[in-house]
Length: 454
Ligand code: GDG
Image (cartoon, rainbow, N blue to C red; front, side, top):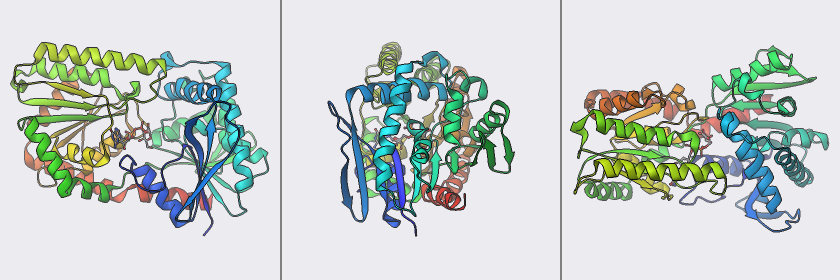
């Protein structure tokens, strides 16, 4: 079996940690099977970072990482990746910073990383590059004479042509993407947007899954990502998770808990979600004292201005809602700005009667899948899920909502509160069938099999 080389902006831990999610675990497993190499940024910012590679091998898998210097971190990571590509690919042109300096930094880091990886490669390696930080990485490897199989997976949405073409140099990025042998998207919608660009904007042609443009050819397909369903369900049913859950339930006096869990990000629809909860309390007074909304939102990208703004906005909203509705013995909304462990998360999902997942735009959204997998099949909770998440298309047995429709989401919450147990069980069984069949191992295997054939 050929060696697998995974390239991603952040390199995950090779051994499980309390915070490691299903994706890191699945990639680590695939790497172990193929005695692979995981290459990327160390997560460290070092002043005057030399292009010095740090390597570490555990159980046959090697982790090779580079530090970034402060300018690279500002321009490549905070700048082009997180202030330009991230908002644009999530349809937030209003938040997109088009800055040549960011673009140059992005190209520079991609090139430096490609130069560091190229000498480590073996002839029969299969290389799998992840996400929007590394769009031009494959083209740079090719320019250095790398001939091995090269695959790319985009974890975030691919936007419609009208949005994508607002990006200066959009054609250069797509041209670079066509240097890969295989490109994977989360959903058919993303795939269609990409095909539309190649066919209509780049004047290319299609032959089944294969797209031709700029004198290059690539196979483009959808590979919806899953979670480690069976393990996560098991963890949620463990004695420890159940003990955690019982303690949490007692702390809210057995009220119906609504839970939200998201990286603190403007794509996740958090202000709209808080307003929907407020609307529930306005429109349905029977909910007063009976429900409790808990939002976990660990800070992410905390040095990017747009993320500082959203944090302030949420603190104001949470204070306002509690100030308006709280009673001496009832706090309607709890908002926690810190991360918790994965086991705590599993217990929390399980004890929450409603999972509220309402991003304005999301490649997939794994929280929706984790919430469903963590439920007790005999007495499952209800998932309220945005139609604008990739998972919204894959999980029709959830209550699908439009997160911009504040009153509509409030209504869905009320429906979820009163849903009969038979309907909850049926919906949950439907969701679990899909989650067990399309788990993260299958996603990994499907992508790598397609790459072998590309
Ligand atoms: C990108 C795409 C796509 C969150 N808070 C805590 C915590 N988490 C974990 C969740 C989940 C993960 O983080 C978040 O995954 P999402 O899929 O929801 O979102 P992104 O981070 O935006 O991921 C997304 C994904 O890539 C995979 O392709 O689905 O669309 O944007 O696993 O559980 N984990 C712990 N404590 C927390 O407080 N332990």
